[in-house]
Length: 310
Figure 1 (cartoon, rainbow, N blue to C red):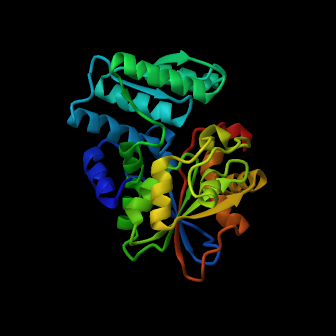
Figure 2 (cartoon, rainbow, N blue to C red):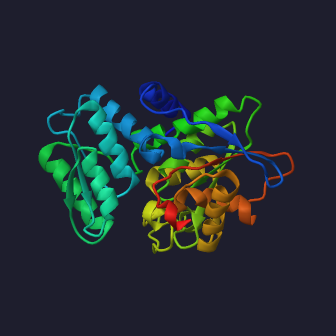
């Protein structure tokens, strides 16, 4: 469980190490008044840099980080890139376990950040188990992709920026949901100030199914946003924050995501990955309809994509 106090502490901790990303007014607020939070401009092209820096700095503070051993993470995607980048900035080793079928371009980028990349298994679960074993054997600090307090609180700092930059107030913050770390952090940051809408692909309804079942439950993973939103279940932290703060879940289809991603390029010349376009798809399709005059911020959370696929 995390609260706004945890997010505020994370903001102080990572200040000066991450970019304060800007807001861009939407041309069409879909009934309300809208802004994009351009978090795809963050270091490594993803919001996950915030949580990575907060996790490593927290480990320094509580003296659990051995600089000679460093950190370990299981992820061939954005979490791996963010933690490898943050570890390099501190001069500590990073070991990243990835599935054997991880995209070569991401593996190459991990190595460019100085990470030791270990290929293990055909699915994320095998890489995760190997990373946990490595942490237990070596004493490396494990950096979860989404379900750790420091990771989620770090992600939530972008929510604080939205609240501060929209000084006249914001009613709703719309975020994509996979494992739920971003949603949890933003909902904790905005608690008492704004509501949060979590948007998921219909093919990966982690939050939607958890809310219906009364707790985190496994879902099948497929679809065009699976590379970044492909968690098999919502994190325990995310579920706890979502139920405490009343996060609303809406679902969109793959065609909706593609349409939203294309619209971002056509109308704004913004290139994002499918996971980031998922949040905007809720407005484009009407899966979430702002009330007249409602002030809405949509988080564009990542840009690690191939522009040729637009």
